[in-house]
Amino acid sequence: DEVQRSAADPAPASSAAALVARGEYLVRAGSCYGCHTEPGGAPYAGGRAIETPFGIVHAPNLTADATGLASWSSDDFWRALHNGRGRGGRLLYPAFPYPNYTRLARADSDAMFAYLKGLAPVAKSNRPHALRFPFDQQAALAVWRALFFRPGRFDTDTARSPQWNRGAYLVETLGHCNACHSRRNVLGATAGPLDLAGGLIPIQNWYAPSLTSGREAGLGHWSIKDITDLLQVGVSNRATVYGPM
Image (cartoon, rainbow, N blue to C red):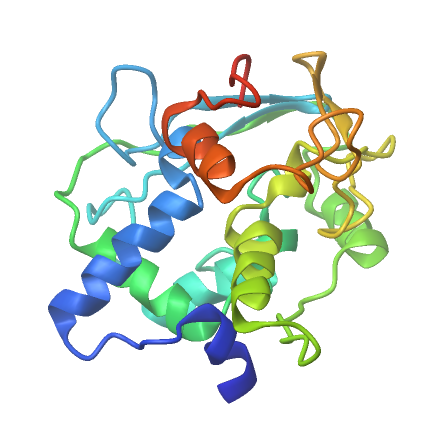
């Protein structure tokens, strides 16, 4: 898909090594480490407990072990990101932000998979979720998906610059910024990736400020250096990162 690829990957990887390097960049951009690594545990080996208003979800192992992605194909991985379904077709819980990842380009999914398959295998069986009834039922999840999820794609805005489209792609898909910087309804759904008006992070009771309002953390008057500094080291001339950010 040329339109999608132009925003997602202006310079496609031309070798296996370049593909893996590209995948590492994308996996880092998606902050996969943050959820799929237990404190003090092996990187990407899973097991981290993610608290939600509906119970606890345990992040799975992403290493190339039999307990992780060893038996997965690139098609399986793409289906998880794009359709929110596991290798066997089981519906995945949206604590895994597939409502954002669904719009990733297939080329980026394949690069991420190539990187993860190259990680040192760590034998660590996935822990079952601890969700309350009826949220632990696939039927309930199917209803949620019918209400709030549709597989999608990122479409380039031809009225905008390539730089703007690249930024939109990262913010709305891999960055899943609205997962924190957006309000959620009683069933845990956000209004969509374009809603960055701020919201309370469930369980943590931490307010993620608006990224659009100048009265909060709106970035419209920030310099590129200030934004870059904040994202890279957590401190800039405009603000300091603390809390769950």
